[in-house]
Image (cartoon, rainbow, N blue to C red):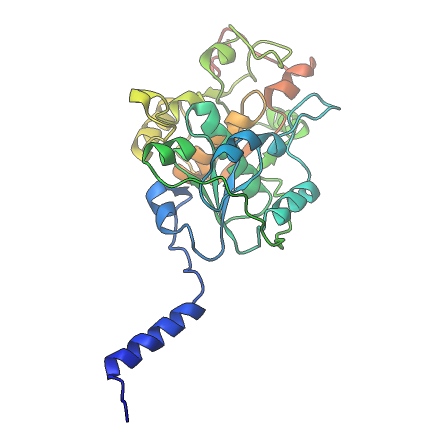
Length: 316
């Protein structure tokens, strides 16, 4: 009788079991995921990689397995108000289910990652997804630019995901409306943070979509340009260290109480998404919201006060 050695039988059993094994479950990831982490977990079970670049950029090449939802779909122009407003929970549900996102999916969001504007798109998508009730999300630090700078694999294959089961439900504490702003200005007790550039905050310049120069009176300013290392020695848009962010938060006058209510705004809410990510996920502020209509909506209402040629908290 021809008997096989014991080690041969064990080898064959392990090979057979491997054939039935499912993809590995991803190791725990921070809200800020590194390219190293994603490389190790590309084939992990339940992982959805979400590219928010344009469809053209996605089609040329993307991180393997990524699905695409361009940023314009996250923050579209509202014809009635002229603002860029987050879609309804019903629309978001339809988007996410078509992308194969389930309640238990771990979603990695990435953007082009070259400039602060690129990075703010990914961070804003993170804020919207968080506000719509999906909590297991990570933002890819440095985005597609860092991924390619490091020589990591890309392809142009478009996955066909199975429909997901995630149902969006807006958490109103994460998204502020114009009515909320008016009430908060009268009531007090809320810290407002302008993350536009200094020229726009001061009232020296403005976006073409904004009707008036200046800013909401009595607030603080921390331009989103300083929240990443984009462009420094040709660096991609990598989020600054917690130590640097903590120092800047103190320098711009943010309260040390992490339960303080903070409303972040910019021109259209895109850059405000970066403010949300930095404050909520990197610095631990628990009560952070983004003004959805931001300055486009606020400045269009001439009954609301606006300040020019001053630095926020200076009201005289």
